[in-house]
Figure 1 (cartoon, rainbow, N blue to C red):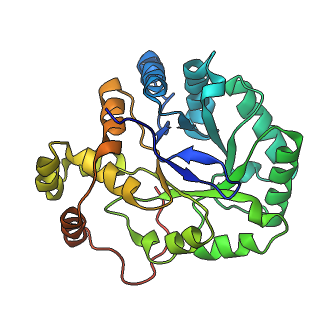
Figure 2 (cartoon, one colour):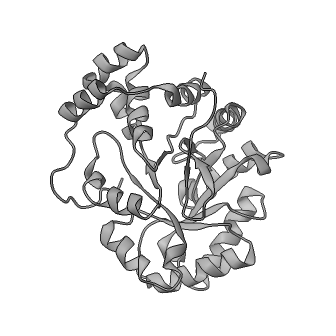
Length: 281
């Protein structure tokens, strides 16, 4: 088992884990509720203390699952949630935050993200997020699904430099952000939070990963996850509803990809050679 959780650092100077627990699609089926809660609790027991959720997931249902999993353990957790763009106005942000806090049964979020850009001016959303931070409702804020031009625009706004992360789609089969967005963020010390790091399980069944997995005596899914965590300044947030998958995700922390492995992965999943539009799922 990995000896310790690796971390990366946000612009604030705070260290956060490079492996978290995602909750997209949790809370959608009451029959799976107990299993989902148990998986998150097991992750906490292992030391995977970053949990990512959103008001959008199952219309708040995922936050209910998280609330049960972290009950009595709130101080162990680095808790992340997201506000929908439709709620990203000066009055909508605090209202949405209060609803998330209520569902999560906590008095604060460690990180609150704008889920993606909508019609509300970015400056207004930033102002609302900053007000929440100063009020102690959230400790930090960030964004999600922002491309390089969005991040550049954000950086020019008053308090735009308070952004702590950008959560985007990133995995072996979706490497477009390596061309410009990741280097831009890394240069400014802003971690990239990678959702769907195993492409919702698709990469677990990709034969191109079999040989590397065999070299390390691990699964293809673990290789895919290790690749994401191998990148500097990247945090992976795979969702796992089963305890065995949580354990495998944790054990992927110990996989040390070699130069040969990376060369093989680059041949199988070529890195971008030009700018690509940001992908979302």
